[in-house]
Image 1 (cartoon, rainbow, N blue to C red):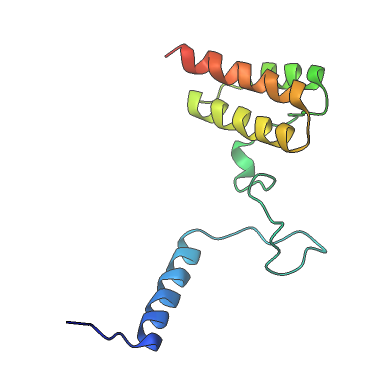
Image 2: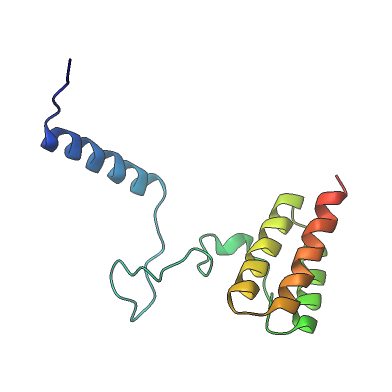
Amino acid sequence: MTVKIQKGLVKGRIAKEEKNVRKSNPRIPRKPGQPARSKKHSDLYTDENPKGTIKGLKFATRDDAVKSVSKIRNSGRSKAHKIQAAIAMEQRARVMGKKDAAGVYRKYINSVKAKK
């Protein structure tokens, strides 16, 4: 027995669900000059909640990463927040080819996980 589904009905239901998700999780507008629906948009580089941001984190050099890890350690945030910040910085460093800086962040992440 096969079930036939009207295409318009399914598409309409999906569209309504997408609108509900957008309302409950609003997005920050794209950057000036960025094309609409850009595939280059990445949450790795956007700040969805600036209130909880640990400011001044860098990954350009190994020394910057060491200073940033110190800022993360002393931030007073929860363990989960610290790990998320370090993971984001590690990923940014890795994408930019900064293996030394990424290694500093990875070492910190592993040390925090080991402390359980």
